[in-house]
Amino acid sequence: SDTIEMIQARPLGYGLETFSLVYPQFQSPEFFEYEKFTSSADRAHNLILDLWVAAGPLAPLLFFILLGLLIKTGYRSPETRGYVLGLIGYVVSLLFGFETFLTGVLFWMMVGFMISKIPLPTPSRKSSLSYGILIAMLALLIITLPFPIRHFWADCDYTKAEALLTENDLM
Image (tube, rainbow, N blue to C red; front, side, top):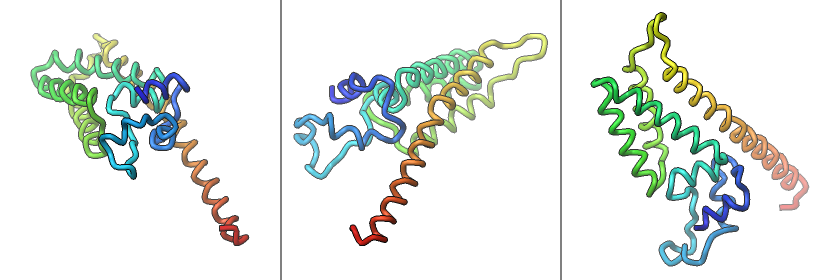
């Protein structure tokens, strides 16, 4: 419910990796019934909500379009059916948990392996599905690309301000 309040306050998202900075403003007292007082949350325990909080409503939509295209394409080939089941299982688990760095790398490696096994369309038969997968991946990249750049510039400004404060003995 705290994450839904975050989305209602800013429906277009807060930016990648900003959950831990913004969540304390919306954190309910019940959080500390399960966690220590020094604990902080850095992810929503739901993939859809986590993507929405980070990058707005288009991020989960594009992610599930990409996933749907991968499932539809991958299930046709016996070589990639195992990958499809792995992707589905992983995404279902993320509806009740969150991604870690390692599981994220493994997920995208599985996507890459699966795509590498999908036969390329012949020139006489172009697959709109392959183009759909490519377009969905590019759209995800374009939507999420500005967020790390903004974070990088904010970090640079913070470092400059900290240096000025130290230089002037204000810290």
